[in-house]
Image 1 (cartoon, rainbow, N blue to C red):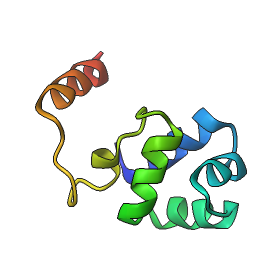
Image 2 (cartoon, rainbow, N blue to C red; image 1 turned 180 degrees about the vertical axis):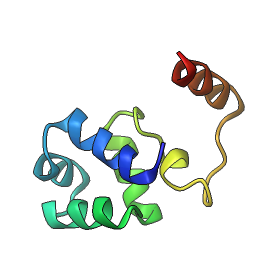
Image 3 (spheres, helix red, strand yellow; image 1 turned 90 degrees about the vertical axis):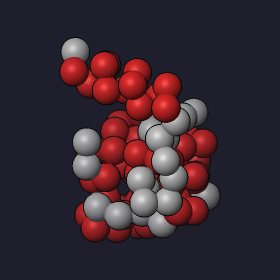
Image 4 (cartoon, rainbow, N blue to C red; image 1 turned 135 degrees about the vertical axis):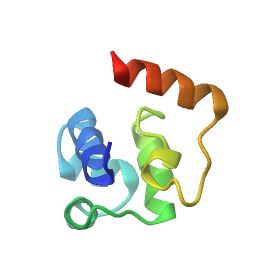
Length: 82
């Protein structure tokens, strides 16, 4: 799943860009910019993870900064294949 798709999934979970922004302590514009660019800062990745209650984990948003937990990557791969 691309970063852009993950951000869109977080928006869908929270209901809107504005609601995700509020939950993350940033503006709706910051969420739109991240989605459009397909990139998030490490700080925003952590905030999205917290706002979505780990449904969108930081390591999926920024795999260059965090490694996937061994058990989570297997479980996610299996669920994505279904």
